[in-house]
Image 1 (cartoon, rainbow, N blue to C red):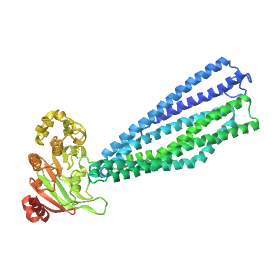
Image 2: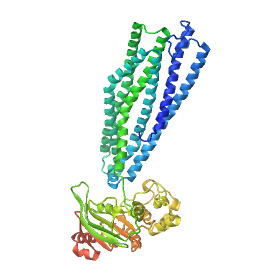
Image 3: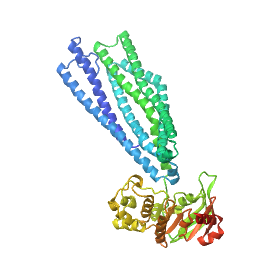
Image 4: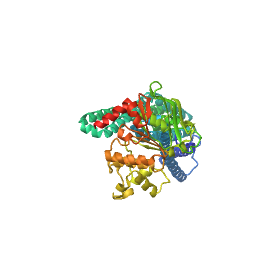
Length: 570
């Protein structure tokens, strides 16, 4: 079990056994004390290990009280260990889940829905931790039941047979209900994930929902999803409560039958029969706990399995690099590179080009031409299906990732920010940058003056998702984040799509400052954004249709020529 150490279960078993034997002894002593007080019999005459006819009554009281203390300490230790095991499982599983996700390959990460990962780390994880707690409960209840069984053997072997028979019969009779509970639990687990996805979608599209006046439709969809979860939840809860109560009723009936059986056979003296009765009745509670725990186990298994499956999936697809350290990026080359997402349709087909250090390259083309796929290959987020990606003439897959990624920077079309300060967003969880580095990066991004005029300056909080900043400021903040580490490969994906002409001009100034220092790729649709590029590649239908200087493309590329004409009409 994830995160649970074997020694804890061993100690749990020892404490449970100690507590169980102490309880069994106390129960027999209670019968002995009651009989003595009633003056109906002076002591047990079974001759077993619990024979106490030679002990004084005061000694029995002290012994019973001492055993009660031992039982309390043992059971308290068992409870603490059970909680510790469950907590450890939750922490360990959450750590493994997110660590696995963050280290998984980009194809796996990009296919993972945000709502699904959130659901796994919250609802599913709590249930998985409860699974561990139930297992601990089964260990405790099972050992306690076993100690009562062994104690019954010492008092009367026939009673032990009766106890085992009762437990076995009830387990077989109630197993179909437990299986049905597991099925409803799985339905609830899947339904909870789908409901979380619907909630996430509704939040992300709240603005569109209001503008297009489909609030009621979203509300209806969420109600339907909530009702679906409620149905499976109701059925699972009914079954979880029905099994223990059914067990208790059947167990009482069987105990009555067992007592009649012992009576008819005239087995044992009064004290022995009394001890057997007490042990049988007490065993009912542990048997009920065992049956309830088994039923709970069926309920929680689907949750635990989904978490374990996700962890194993991430582990199987862990990102792996080579062993060659990157000394510096001087050239990048794609040699007849193709890529397919499904193994059939090519998103990129036979792409070849070479770019040198200090060059600014534009990437343009219609939607669906393969621009995003090309960017992900350049960043080594995806590996070519066919062909070679060479860095300084070395196959990219042979390069060490630890020396590769610190040389890269990415500016996305949508500015994605941390909830924190301006300074924290520029540093972006990276050590080694002082205040001067932060200020220099902001200055290069033409953002420093605006930040310093705001209350708090670089220490000012920008709010959730950067709500305290304008769209242009958020975009320039991500550019400052990109260039603070003096990267050697910078990729900007539509960096000016949400900016006005002044903002676009500011971005051009920042890019121009990188000329000669880094390889820069700019994905853009606007010819005005591409104007600063040394060369522009045109992608069409996954193929490299053209790769030339902007002045030449106007006459050699129909797509670029049309884009230029449309831009003049704006």
